[in-house]
Image (cartoon, rainbow, N blue to C red; front, side, top):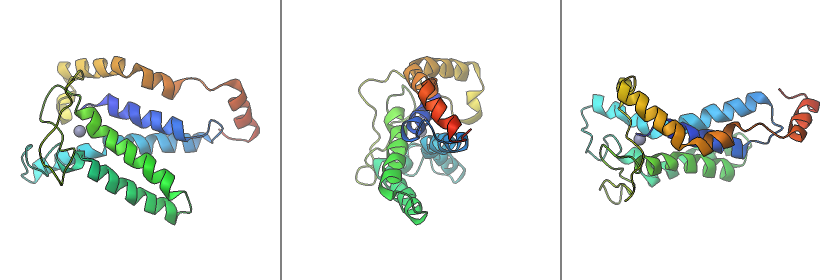
Length: 183
Ligand SMILES: [Zn+2]
């Protein structure tokens, strides 16, 4: 897994799809939801507990790190959004893109096995030819010197994402928000 990089993508997506004048609660809700979705594929580490080894198609970086999985989660989210009277297409596309960003990033990391990007059609694990992101230790291993080093590297690597996500809003947008009672 990469780590902070996934969260950065979730934050960027949340900022991109949320109007500047939206209520703060909505902004935070979307940011939290999209950050969780950006990390969702790594929920597959529970498969270790069920005895699936890393290299198994259902193991870590297996099925959940495929484009098919991202598409399925997108379709599911779209259906739920539609049921709630929202734009199913829009929500589904954003969710699928954020989930798909996870294995795309992982395939840039320099350790572990690659991602089963094309599961279920192809169970081979893939990396991109260029792998500049140091792989993060799994689970509590992150709370180590190596984990800190990886965290700092990703913090710097994704600097443009943090900047975009947290850049102060223009005064006009803030004024509009204040007058609409948001906040
Ligand atoms: Zn991962």
